[in-house]
Image (cartoon, rainbow, N blue to C red):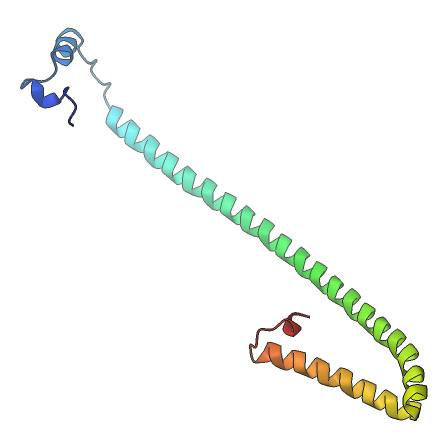
Length: 141
């Protein structure tokens, strides 16, 4: 339902608006007002662009510094992970190879070769999954 108060209700406009415009006259603008206003707007727009550009450049530099810091942090974590994995593999080989040699009845050199082969095949499989885009849980190790 339409509002009952509409501007079209009074052909000459709202009576209150007419009375106010008849009693209150707008003051005359000073000379050069429009030109000064236009100049102020252009100056504000120009400064606004410079301020925004400066803010965007500083934000870009800050994000770039955070990205580089994150990259260095990831490299440190990968180095620590590689050292931990190497230590774990060495420790497990030290324990597993003599135990397997007595359990299977084979010599340590043959078991070490098979152990290294299995690790190499595992690393190759993970690298192949990552290279060819296969998405699996093993590719994220």
